Length: 149
Image (cartoon, rainbow, N blue to C red):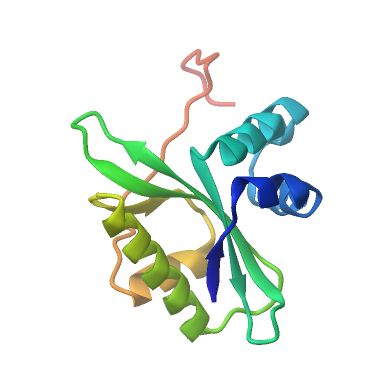
């Protein structure tokens, strides 16, 4: 069962949520106290959402976070910011997660769902469920000098 946490519950469980977020994030700067506090404020303020996928025995299988993203043309998307799994997640549980997010996105007038990932298992799952994985994210350092490192 997928549950969206209330902001007050996020604050109470931050000591469990933060490590899950830190593991999914790349780069030391994104795991800094300042970045983590910004995420916490977004979760408490309701601009980000924290989700728990629970098993039948009420154990947490996945902690994930989402937010809404608007492209320059004004299209709204459900942006999957992080997904952290505590144990093996069945295909049926992944399906439940994506279906629940899909319903949430539709209720909130989104055009679709999106995420950035280099996780090969997640990429295979998205393809399995009919999603597109044909875009690439490119990153350039802000100190770009035209030389390869």
